[in-house]
Amino acid sequence: MPEADDKSAQDYAPQVPQKSEAFFLRGSGALDWGMKNRLARVFDPSSGRTVMLAIDHGYFQGPTSGLERVDLRIVPLLPYADSLMLTRGILRSVIPPSSPKPIVLRVSGGASILKELSAEGVAVDIEDSVRLNACAMAVQVFIGGENERDSILNMTKVVDWGNRYGLPTLAVTAVGKDMKRDARYFRLATRICAELGAQVIKTYYVEEGFETVTAACPVPIVMAGGKKIPEIEALRMAYKACQEGAAGVDMGRNIFQSEHPEAMIQAVRAVVHRNETPEKGLALYEELSNRP
Ligand code: R5P
Figure (tube, protein in one colour):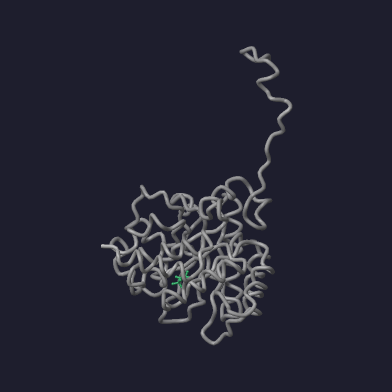
């Protein structure tokens, strides 16, 4: 069937080769279009990093300090976050559907602080993740924990679902109270998650050898924040993690438990996206905190 309109050969620009863009995230070049597109919403393609705001703590510990009123304390932070990690309960009940921020949906659960934390299952169906327009699904993995096998298989189930529907899986490496948090452990935990198919891994920063953790993990690592520490220390940790290979942070308490959460998240952005030093980040935090 001939084309309806007459075109000249020039319209096809036969001498101009079609551009083929390399995908910006490590280890993600062979993923499908939908998954890459979702990852490109979670991670900023211009820096290759993300400031993911983690507010999912309630799924095992109830109303955590700073998260008592997500509507009052967290919603004002949304403009400064690249992505938001949370449960479907808080998403549906509190987060405005008009928010353009990509959602990283917590899909594992089933444990509480009153019992064994590693006793989790998959607690959200893939259909609900799709219905909620999630850009990724987050699953806790307890390497060395009491329910290691179950938690790994939770993750592989979610990875299989995600591969079917184009949603990446974020594996969250959870460390038991009595376990040693060192580079050797995190190399093991992150590599297992990546080998079994997770497209992004969340792990803690360690002072010694963090660069070996990121080097040995073939997919992007985001740094977990952990307990609230002074702002300058949190900024130092985020800075060093990024300089040592992390593709950003997935931070909660060090942002929303700060005295000035809006100032803090902007300071974190400066060190993560603009490679500002922690001292410059702190100066920005102080300047913004003092603004009326
Ligand atoms: C991990 O257990 C959950 O995703 C946490 O709710 C999240 O990692 C906590 O973030 P942060 O340690 O920075 O408060």
